[in-house]
Image 1 (cartoon, rainbow, N blue to C red):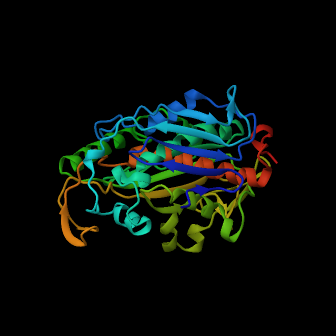
Image 2: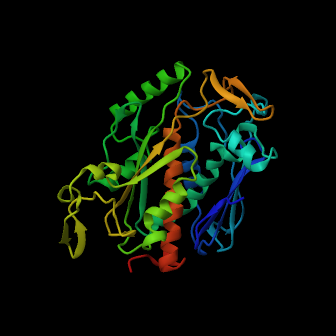
Image 3: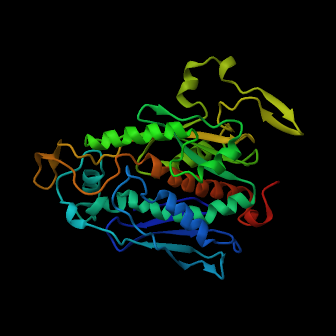
Length: 366
């Protein structure tokens, strides 16, 4: 079972939704990085249910670092974070009837009935809490060398937010303070109304997020199979609700002419910059010095309070199911800090691969 990604910085997930705990191991961090309880808590609080349109399962996320940190700084050895599961209701789940668009049947086919099925087990969104805790370690390390990451809801329920503008740095800082990670507060209210309406109808919504990474030097990444797009996409597709990743203008660029799509280049203040950023900051799989910008398509929460056709894979019979338990009518809000964290972990791996792990102490202006 493969639950790891990264080369210079390796990230390994463990745990199940209704097991004793979820957790993460980070192997390859340089020694001496400050580890802030406040930053980890703040990022976890952004993921935690807090609005009326979120799930009723609220975990306190009383995380603990078991290894890899001494007197507030990383030691350079594997860093292990464990987050206990303290609010579980395993009785909400029966085995056999596959919940449509969940991993129930796929997990059964792979693990031959030995999988922990409660609450989705290892496939549950609960496991992303560990990724966010890891993000609380690496995001401050990136900020210290001038790299910032931010994600907002670009679209949900037919409501559009403003895309990132030329003031990306200010907008990223703004998003960290908002309970609904949206740049246009009027759009945030409309999105919440749409989510509440779907919930009232026993249904759910998906959406699109937009992420920006600023401060990356030109020349990061590899051509062909270790491209920036490839490394980020591999990590992002590990998040269960993400079903599509598009860089820059993405699929919209397919309908443009070259004269409309190309990013003209200029020298500004001694640095090469492009006038536009339709390529999302990447050419040939390598960063070009512009912000790396991409969108993620996030599917509707598959757990809905409506009767659905399914199968009982134990009896091998057709069946009907109405999903019980506690679920988000839309995960789009809570997935934003997860995307931030996964992005930061992948970027740290790429930076460490090019400049060495000590670059987070010495800087990356090379």
